[in-house]
Image (cartoon, rainbow, N blue to C red; front, side, top):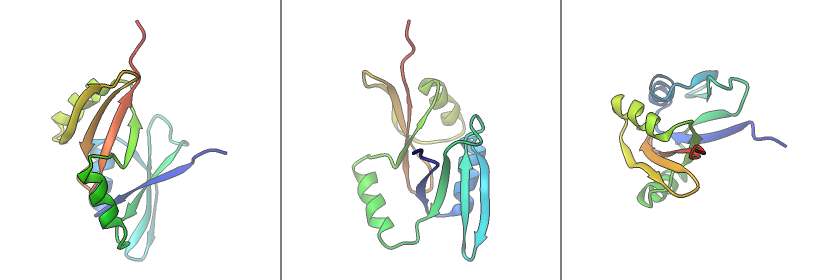
Length: 131
């Protein structure tokens, strides 16, 4: 059994597509129009056949209270693995991304949290390199 798809709820798929591709650097895997919305997934350019991230419309009435509770408690909607949290923090900050948590050593990893501009907090994580 493998995970091949996960999702984040987004307020606006077009805005999310721009952020996730032009700012974060993911690439479009699927963009299939389905009426008002699309089946819209992105993947890492380092693993184009890997796990897809579905940019799921947040239209369902349960999504608003769920995401608001997560944001109010500072809980990320998902987590992305990066080679170097500090480098990604610098790269994304230079692109105007707002971080709610700067790079932080939590003992077993380094992590940072940013606002994806689409209604979610996203956590970046990297394991410290061995010296």
